[in-house]
Length: 327
Length: 219
Image (tube, each protein chain N blue to C red):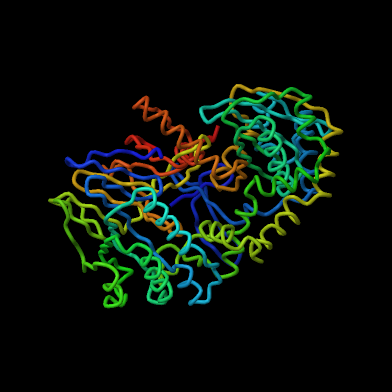
């Protein structure tokens, strides 16, 4: 069995202490390795260092082996879009069958991008009355909308403004369903849901319900419940922390906006797009409204009888393309 | 109310958005999987779940009875969630007293096996596993290909609807195939089992106050 790591097919030879020995695999088909470290937040210092390296690449300087190895990717990035300088904020727009993608490369760390995704998503949703799905990584975020939105430079400046920041953050705590998501972890710690490993026998079946279901029951019948309170507080202290987001917006405000619409997902945009596979996304839309919208779509489809609505999920694409270059 | 009229082997059945079937010609309301007292069961095991679902679900049922004025109510199993829910049974019996003119028939489900049948049968016609009415059979646990027209529950069927970003939501549905209808769980405090498109089931999705057929495609 081979696995893919950093784009190369590898074969596991042995694991000794904390070191895994691998060799280049001859078999090109394999599984994609996933590990929990994917959620490790990048510090702002590390983010600055990455920006510095990208700036070097912009000037054609590739200092070490790692940089030389990603050089071809960065060159494609430069061809299709650009490599942003430290004082530039790159925003890429791209349209697919899924909808309209706006990629923002802030290099501000995962937590900040998560908060920014929720904030900008909320502002977009308020302004254009559309659902928004935000996905984020350490160095950027994606906003996906089913319809195009006005996205001139002045629009972005408004979306990224510090005006009404506190009010908007409080509002997007509810709109972004962030507490609902946070509640999954809390429900597990509180012992409401049991994390069972695959294949393990399930006991107490009559005591099983999902965190999602618990969240709804608590919201309906005990909205002041301490576990819900805990979920809200954690979100406000982490993703939506006021000072951190205010600083971030001020940083972005000093940067020059570079708007690009590349022909395809760029090497920098693709990993953010593919991040959606991990379900680490923020959906800004009221749950009832979402059901309404999807039922309406179903009705329209029932009228037309045959609907060809097969949307592409990152998972499908990744599964198909693991054999080689992800681009 | 935008329900869906289904012609099922010569009978008109109205699939209602609030997870029930109205069989007009027999003046009968049909539901499955009430799971009353589920929160109490969780509490008995030390999980601090707020109560309120049992009351709300019975209120929903009262609303349906008000709207349709049935002579008969069929419950296709899993009336009470677990034996700890003795209080739920009492709540149900008190609720039932409001409708002296209504005949209630219940098939026992897998969750009802410890239910004190002698108490229940004072208020409800209780059937061990099946009963028939106008050529239709009513059971809890569905069989794959019944020989007579059958209505069942137990599975809590849901469908996955795919959104523009590839994510999905799960909504309760009526699953219909040949001579079989599986009702969605009436209780809102339930999960569900997903009906796969390849099962050959036609799903009628209940959501946003409507019942809409799902064409058998990829989503």
